[in-house]
Length: 277
Image 1 (cartoon, rainbow, N blue to C red):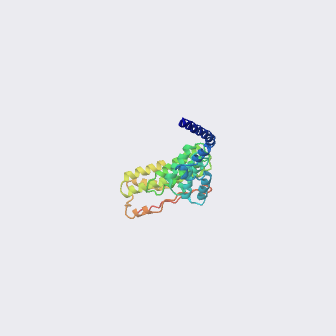
Image 2: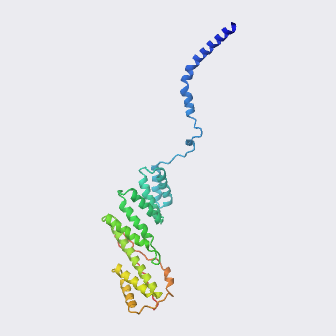
């Protein structure tokens, strides 16, 4: 009887304690929850570096670009394209990244970026400039008439495409001047090959080259020399030049293009042939 009464008393005490503690526990739930919310448990937010804003990066890139530090400029522009590809700064970063490669004389890389820009932004106001720069990338790849001349041919195609699409752009006169220079380069290349055939006594091949030159470039400055040489070959009186004393001339300075100035004037350095009659 005593034990039963004691057990009942303990039950009442436990119930009273529970009723007293329950409101406190309910009011403290948010506190405990907030405490756990503040724990990161190794979250990446603790170690992830804070990204620099695109606005700051474009300023850094342009500051470096404007003083000719194209390497540092590229780093900033590439960071924008990696981290903020859809930002309003991304379009400018694309264009200036291509320009940076161009001024670093990395013409293949620059051409790729210019073409990608044109594909992504076909209605952008910078498209005439981009098309001109694509031509310049090929134009700059052309150096000597005894080497690969594909750059000159592609430059003519590039500039011609610009003239068809934007005949009255600010780059029209320069494009025409560079087309003329590239054609002059190709003419000198054809004459160089013809002379090589003459010196190696491959007269039939030399005639084919000279006829091609005269047919494709009838107004070139080297036409009189080409006609005179062709006449001698057709008359059966080819020059006996040979290769001796001529091969060292292959190391001559590169043919200088007619670089257009503010008035889009062009000039030319003629290749000098030294026949050993």
